[in-house]
Image (cartoon, rainbow, N blue to C red; front, side, top):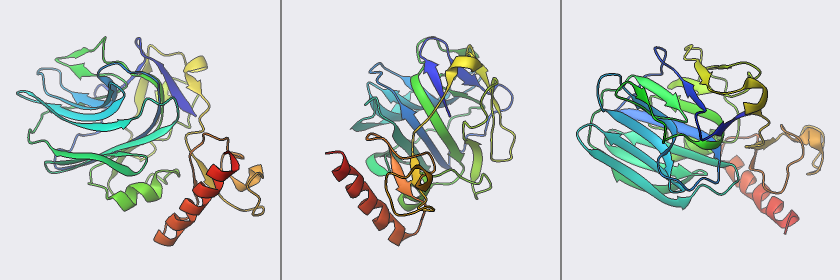
Length: 267
């Protein structure tokens, strides 16, 4: 499952129960699907009630962006379009002041941010600043599989886990939103830390939607590509992201072979 945000007032709030922002080591990952080309469309953000400090992981004019604002705004802005209308995996890694943005497991851009914000309220699909929720920074599109780590994940680690669900007890994982517990107005944290969010201005009957963000090759039935039981999410469609179930370096080569085979099938 995934959540479908309307860009008008849909958001997930965490007032009083937010995952902690770590300015020294941080990784945020998400699957997103959108066609929005507007400015400052938040994926995951932090703010505080009494000041203007903010941290933003967002889509800005169709590109990935990570920014911090304490005394002035500074940001690292990607170059690759992510508002393609297809599922895209996005990530930011903060290692002290060094920032790396990833799109589909590939480095999009790097940069440096030096400010140290004081923030304690996280929001998904919107921004909280000076004790107020924004009316202009709302994300429109679908979100799935949001993961927040208090470690600076490596490129290999991101690639090896981006197309499979996690157990939830991985080292450094401080919040994990699998978007699987649908049907009510709670977005559950599967990491065991209890950082659940509340769907706000959303209709649980219509805003929970099916997701084909990624599909994992299991191969339990046969070696037939078109056999639904060989896949975690049924036989893939032509625009679906997919991976093998293995995570070793050798298996990444297998994933590449699968990718090439998949591309050839639909040419």
